[in-house]
Amino acid sequence: MNRGTAVIAKSGRPVRSATSAASDALRGADLSSSVLTSGEFELFAAVGRLRDVKAGETLFLRGDLGTSMFLIERGEIELDFGDDLQVKRLGPNEFFGELGLLIGNHARSASAVASVDSTLFELHHQEFEALVDQDPGVVSCFLRRAIMRVVLNEQALTRRLRRRNHDLQAALDSLHATTHQLNQTEELVRTDELTGLYNRRGLMLHLQECRAIGMPSTMGLVIVDCDRFKQVNDQYGHLVGDRVLQSIASILRAVVGPDDIACRLGGDEFCLVVKAESEDEVLRFAHYIVRTAQGLLELDDGHDEAPIICPISVGASLVDAHQDWNAWYALADAALYRAKRLGGDRVEWQDASEPLS
Ligand SMILES: Nc1nc2c(ncn2[C@@H]2O[C@H](COP(=O)(O)OP(=O)(O)OP(=O)(O)O)[C@@H](O)[C@H]2O)c(=O)[nH]1
View 1 (cartoon, rainbow, N blue to C red):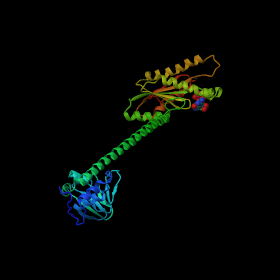
View 2: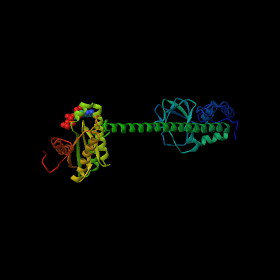
View 3: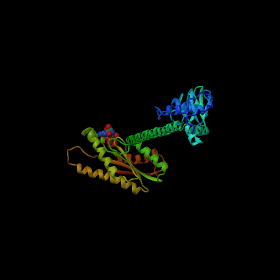
View 4: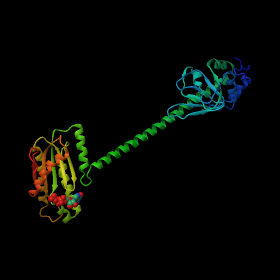
């Protein structure tokens, strides 16, 4: 060991004795700082190769394999770690690239570019080895500083990852809440507020979706319309009218299966779109609705109180899935029109093959 002998300065600058540099380095050194003590700096500078770099000059790029470390004597170096990580700026007496020196052929974790004209010292492995012999005290102090820097960087990275995780979780939660709200809004947009059935918009969207995934070639359409409903409103008031509409909605809800749709088209007009292949199947739905309303009317009969139901007319038809809603509606509406003309409180059928009356 050459403790106490003068260090040969590659840069040609005067150097203090290694012993004084070592004690200087150890005395009051803040090991968490990347700023070297003057003792450390002088010792490293003494063996390092002097390099002048111009503003904008690249020392190395992220991913390059490095074998040397740098000390900054003058100027400023920017370390760019890529992605959205903050650019680090190092100034006089700071060092960087030490893992390249200590590990050898270490992939640089940042790109180093001079932001202004700068003077650096570059240390390779053999120069560092020489220092180990000359002043193990300073080298050990430097190694502790380097390890501390790795640990601090790792802690900062862990903190950043935790924060990012937390932000990601918060973003996911808010995405969940927004999706939930959107679903609820979409549900509201598709639903009739008074009865909870699909509204016309909901029905159209639903049919669009059914067409997209493929629907059976025939369906049953049943249109339901209250008879003389205006009189209910006029005689008992709007709220009673509302309750009658809700009763009809309940009847429709009770008859539909999972593949059928019950909808309030508007005002006192409702419809059912049901999975059906024959006239009988569709008529079963239609007669059930009218009979249920008639049954409730009989219960209501003789009471002076406000009605919970009114007579209803129904038009029904088998419709071709390839035709559009207007064609479907024209068929069932022709049957409904006939039911109304015949005095209401009944079911009428319209065959697709017969002319609309
Ligand atoms: N209570 C209530 N009434 C409504 C609502 N929407 C529409 N109406 C009323 O429903 C009535 C429908 O009247 P019309 O189309 O003449 O039907 P109707 O009196 O049943 O006549 P017919 O169908 O020919 O027997 C109107 O008076 C509307 O004001 C609602 O949400 N609640």
